[in-house]
Image (cartoon, rainbow, N blue to C red; front, top):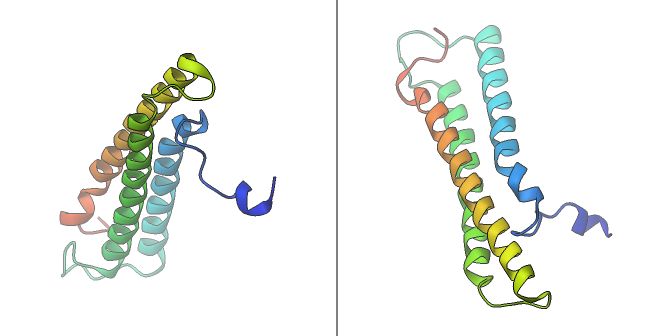
Length: 130
């Protein structure tokens, strides 16, 4: 396997997709809370501006980027789910497996995106260092 192919995102019907969405969410969660903790410990923002601080802006951008990536992954899996209706080279059973894996992966990516939005919502109205 070439180095470029090893770094690519797995196919939409790959079993790796089932764990990938919430793995991305957990990486976002760790980076967001470590960043928040380090930001509050090293250079706490002034209490006056409330939620409108550079720390919250940076974490919000990180959140939007993560949600965008998860939604893009869900879209790719959803397109593969739609395309897997026709039997492929592995017959009807192979098409059914690819369709199931792509559909389930799309739902899991959407759930991970929803979890990211839900956990990231306090960045909009709460000051970062309470």
